[in-house]
Length: 499
Image 1 (cartoon, rainbow, N blue to C red):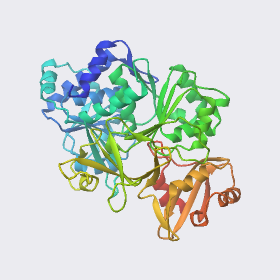
Image 2 (cartoon, rainbow, N blue to C red):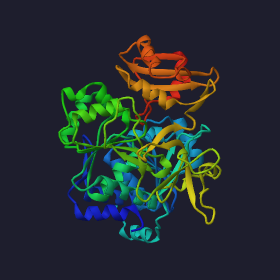
Image 3 (cartoon, helix red, strand yellow):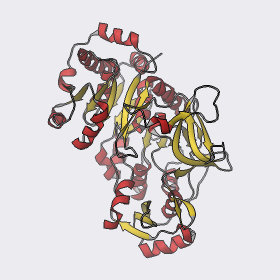
Image 4 (tube, rainbow, N blue to C red):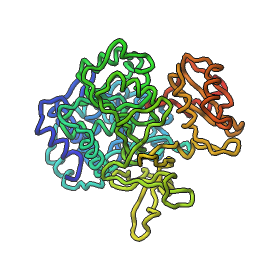
C-alpha cells in the first residue's frame, strides 16, 4: 500500500466501533473519525491544489487529528501549528511555507486573521459537515505515490529561522511498522498521549495506534503539574502504553507519586526527546518492575527515531542510559572528524525513515542530507544528525551529546551531558541543565531541587575533575520547560545571569 490512509482504513474496517482517539470531552470511533476526515478532505478539494501545504491551527484534540487526515485525503500535506504559538513566529514560518489554506475553528479565527498569507481560511465547523465526495477522494488516491509528502513539522533552526522538515508517506509507513513490530502495538493498546502534535514524538503513538486499531487517549497538559491527578487519569482510561519526554516521567518520580497511587494497567513505558536520568528511571523501575522500558532516540529528520534501547539491566543513578542499536529497516554509523568510520564520532543515518528535506529551503539540506561518504559508487542520501556517540562494552551506542553541546574549556573537550549526569545523580536534584557561556568561558549549572548549592558543590568535587567543574551553580525554584515539555536550554543560556 502506497499511503498511510490505506492502513488506517484497514484498521477502520476491522474495528469500526472501537475508539480511535479521545480526550476528556470527546471521542471518535474509527468509523466516525474516518468519516470526519473524508468530509474535511472533500472540502479542501474545492481549493483545486495537490501536494501543497495546508496548515492546521487547532488545539490538540481528536478533531485536530481528523483535520490532519482530511488534508491527506485531499491530496495535500498538513503542517501543524501550535495554537499557543505567537503570531509573529507563525508569520516567519509562512514566509517560506505559503500554505494553500489554514484550517481553524471559531476559537482561533481571530488570531488566524492576523496571519500573513494569500490562502484561504477554512472554518473547521463548516468542513466537518461538508458532504463526502467519494469520486474526488478516489481520483486523488489513484494519483498518490508513496514519496508524496504527508506532513511538515517546523522546528527551530540554527539560523534563527524555523525549518520545515518534510516527511513522506513512505517514511511514516516504514517507521510506524517498526514501532508496531518492536513494541507489539495492537488493537488492545491504549496510548496515553503526552506530546504536542507539532512535536515529532507524536507521530509515533498517533500512527502506530491508527494502523492497528489501538486507542490514542490525549492527556490534558494540566495533569503534568498534578502527578496524582495524572495517575488517576491513566487508571480511569486504562492506559497501558505511554511515550513521554523524560521530563514528564521525572515529575512523577520527583514528587514520589507512586507512594500514594500507581498506574494499574501500565505495561510499556517509552521515552525520547532528551536524556532520561537513571535516578528517576530507577524510581519507575522500582515501583513498576514488570513494565517494559525503552529509550528511543532520533531527530525529526528520521521521522522520529533511528536507534533504541530496551532496558534490560540495572543502572546506577549516575550512569548514562544507552541509546542502543539501530531500528530495523534503518542503519546508522559513526564517522570521526577525518570522515572515517569509527567507534566514536558523529552519528549518520540511512534508510527509508529519512525525511525528504526542508520545505522551500534548497540550501539547508546540503549540510544535513548528504551523499553517503562510505558509498560513492551510487547516489545514496544519508542524514548527518549532529549527535556524537560511541559504542560501549556491550556493543550499544551511547549518546555523548550534540556537537553544539560539546565545548572546549581549559584546553579540554567537554560534553555538558556528562556533567548533567553527575549532577542528576546527586540526592535532592529534581532536574538540571548545564550551559556554556563562550564569551566568559564559563560552565554554568542550573538546577531544581532541595539540595543547597554549597552541599551540591561539595558532592560534585568528588564526582567531577576540576576542568569540568561548573563556574557557577544556580538553584531555581522552577525549571523552565519549552512547549514540547523539555527543559528550555535556549532560555536558560540567554537569561541565566538574570536568575
